[in-house]
Length: 197
Picture 1 (cartoon, helix red, strand yellow):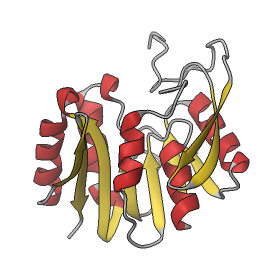
Picture 2 (cartoon, rainbow, N blue to C red; picture 1 turned 30 degrees about the vertical axis):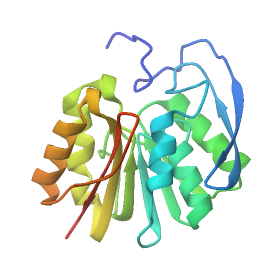
Picture 3 (cartoon, rainbow, N blue to C red; picture 1 turned 90 degrees about the vertical axis):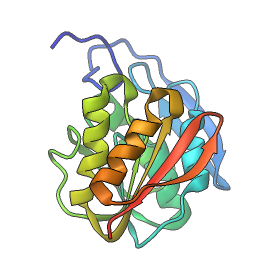
């Protein structure tokens, strides 16, 4: 594969450009180390912030699929005392997520996986800010694959912009789960939720 330096690929050969971001999310003071080659390296993206505000946990376990440097999983684990697993295909993102889990005193499992290929077990909550640039097959694979990795009554919560495919994502989630609620619409971002009945 040609390395185009996309954030959803293996970017270990890319030159580093480390930054530390300080954010208050869900009333938690958090620090995130970022680097070149990861999604939203200069700031916590607006879609992730909208998802965090819309999230209401069920149960006690969480999977952040396509975690990047760990914003969703680590913030939610810290706020709601959830047992979190963070996974990504990008080793650089995983290194940052591991560093950020220590930086924020969150005990999380950090795991490399292409979508759900290496994910074992089931979760009460799965959150996703899917890599839109990876294409519809990957995005819909992340949404549909969540079903088999959720406990009964578990929920998938995803953020997608309307112009980047939220309506088709909603349709896919409804097809797989039999339900899909738009929790919030904010500046073109849709927070979509499906529950495994």
